Each structure stands twice: as C-alpha cells, then as structure tokens.
Length: 172
Image (cartoon, rainbow, N blue to C red; front, side, top):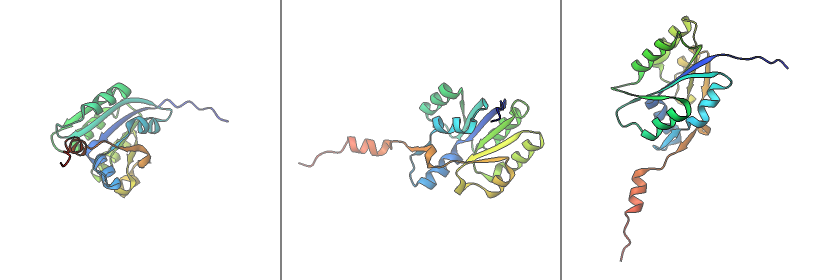
C-alpha cells in the first residue's frame, strides 16, 4: 500500500440561496437545510480547510447557522445585497493565490467563467451541489463534482407549524 501525504489547502465558498433552493426543490420541503457537520468533512477529506464562507442574500440569516459554522469550521456568514454571485466570485479571486483548491457549493451556471479563470490561474476547482439542479456546463468545467444527496440534508422544524400547534384551542 502506498502512503501518500496530501498537503492541500481548501477554501469552501457557499452560495446559500442557490444551495437551499436546490435542496428544497428536490426534497419538496421548504424547511430542508444542508448538514454542514456531515458535508464539510466529506468535501475536505484529508486536506486542510483554510476558509469557509457562506454567502446569503438578505439580512435574515440564521444566527444559529452563523455560530455553528464559526464554532466548528471557523467559518463566516456574509449577507449579500442581491445575489451571492459577485461577492462569492470576488472572494474566490482573492483566495486564488492563498489556497490549492476552491470548492464552490452551487450549481449555478453563472460560475462557469469564474471556474475557467481560477483553473487558468492553477487553482483546482471543485463544485458541490445537488446534481439534478446543477448546470451540466458547470459540471463539465470543474475539476471534480461532489453530488450533494439527501444524506447531507435534514428537515428543520417549521416554526409556523409549531406555533399553530401550540396555540390551537380545544373546542368546548
């Protein structure tokens, strides 16, 4: 058996809105969310995590998610004014000289040109997304594609349903 030590550094950049929509579309449940505790170790393997940044449109970002990403992965959550495409792309370009691999969690074809550019700069680019909702062109352009399956998501409690259950009154 060959014993090879891999010393790659990896940055994970997440397009939160794209990823959430994909998972919710496939699961048919609007409360389906990604389980980063399972997914990140699977993506990293025996490499080193340099950075994890979760980009999400809007200001209503879960404080619990933010704290969890920071506690477990020293990750950060960045709210975006509109789409995550531009902020994520800028961060990827900033990190290109600092890491060996960038993993983008999104199936959005808007990232095709970014992937091409990063690869031309010598960065390994991997995509992790729900295969059924991922652009085939993006999959073709990437160095490696990680399929995010239902094994990597969970159903969060629906606060609207929970509140309704708590306030139901019995009929007399």
